[in-house]
Length: 140
Image (cartoon, rainbow, N blue to C red; front, side):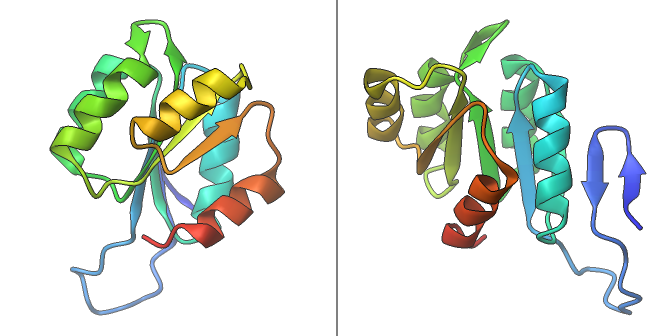
């Protein structure tokens, strides 16, 4: 059973006596609640602790405060551009893998994201299978 705390879900406790055991964490910054929930449910199955936010400003604060192991970053957000924030994120967290997400699957936007440091570009709509394949390629 999943443990729920607001917008954060973790895999269930396996009964380990090691209270310092930490599951790899993922932050999702996307303004679409359905996308966040789909990603969250998919990623928890892989053993990740998943948190999501709907605004870039809150997401940036969360990145620098909680230092996730992987970031899903929507390019078009109501309060800013994930594409413009990506170089700042990579400058402060160079080893953080970032998967950019966009409803606009165009070659120029994809190339700009990859050039700015994104590990992958995920076009909406996407399948759970595609997310599973991405996670298999990125080991946190």
